[in-house]
Amino acid sequence: MEIKEERIKGLFTFLPKVFGDERGYFLETFSQFKYEKILNVTSLVQDNLSLSSKGVLRGLHFQSPPHDQGKLIQVIKGSVIDVALDIRKDSPTYGQHISILLDDIEKKQFWIPPGFAHGFCALEDNTIFSYKCSNYYAPAFENTILWNDKNLNIDWNIKEPIISEKDQRGIEFNNFVSPF
Image (cartoon, rainbow, N blue to C red; front, side):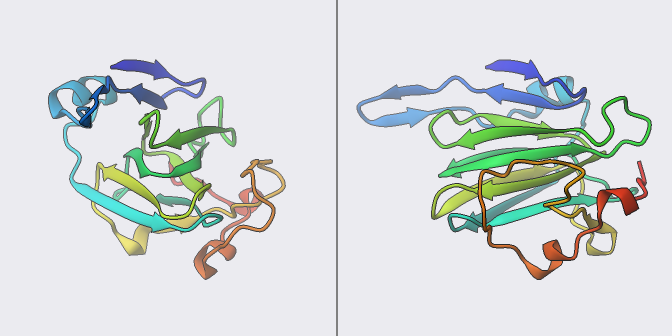
């Protein structure tokens, strides 16, 4: 497996070894022993899957402490533009983001630790997205930063995304007070 720390400290991508032949392929998608050393996380406690149509944009979501979550994410089917926004108030990269293409061909994984808001936009119909989370879902601690905030300048690679009501009511970044 290739491991790369991204330009914003704490974000990692993992490119697994894929063993393929005429029958299909095999890859290891998770090993607690391997990942806990790199991610400094002792356990990932919840798995989530989402199915999205082309053009669905979800985010930018995060959970506040003490229910903050790290997420190990991967596309099972389809492709997405995935975005991690640094919301750690003392970070030198506060307010900066990284966009990464994740798809079912390369099978890359992306680690987003606590202290980041996360979102993605599906580039294909029937995109299946997988999350391994370091903490349980706690709706009372969930927050949303406005996906199209002009101050963030995020290129989602789409003109008219499909957005939930919750995501349309996200907090503008200039009005946001980081709990991290």
